[in-house]
Length: 360
Image (cartoon, rainbow, N blue to C red; front, side, top):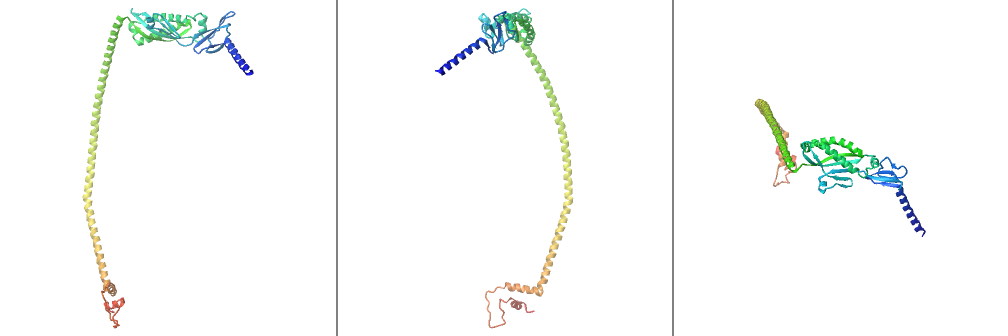
């Protein structure tokens, strides 16, 4: 029970706190401007705009006024003419299109959008002047009158000339800013969205515009043709220069090639002369050296044979030959008389040599 009582007490205390907060504080939303008014005493307004958030204000003592902080859109459009009345929703407002008589006495209907905002820290002045309820309508009337006066300075052709329209709007903006500043608002942009002439004149105007466009097209084509002529001339000059340069370089190449061919022929001729002179000498020297070498070899061979013959003709040579002959003798069969002591044995080489050569 005690816990339940504590919870109930806390809830009651919280509710009481929220009630007290709601009676002594006022919440201004992000898209709003707050203006505080005193309801007692001499009354009056707090001379400042209150930003979004919570602000002190006692219910019954203070009164809060809320104005739209966002950009306002004021549009004069044919859509309003079709519905037959003005429309206002949120920060947007639609009015009938502007009916204007041009400086050359033509009737024209214009759709225009003007954006504006309440001047910073002047919302309290707007409320103090009693304009809170109808400032939007008064701004619409002021803008409408000023635009009609200024746009009437344009002639028919100026309405479909973008540069002239933009120039006029840049001139209108400071004048309009001065006019609506009395209502504590400031214009931001002026946009002409559509221009309509009477049907018969619209057709005539379209034909005129078409003629002008065709004229501009013809001028453009003439410029293109002139540019093509210039381009063709430049192209021909370039081709001529290219041919001239190519011929010059071909001549240089031919001259260089001829010079190189002459130099190459000279080198080849000199090489042939050198070959014809030096090669026979070299061949003769080669043959001579080969002959001398062969002679030396033959003489060495002869000397070798002579020395060999001399060596073999000596006692030692004969002994060597006899020894070689003895060593190379091959007997299929040997019959020895063992009873004769003078018969040498075949295995006694020295005795066999003496037998073959002689004791001397």
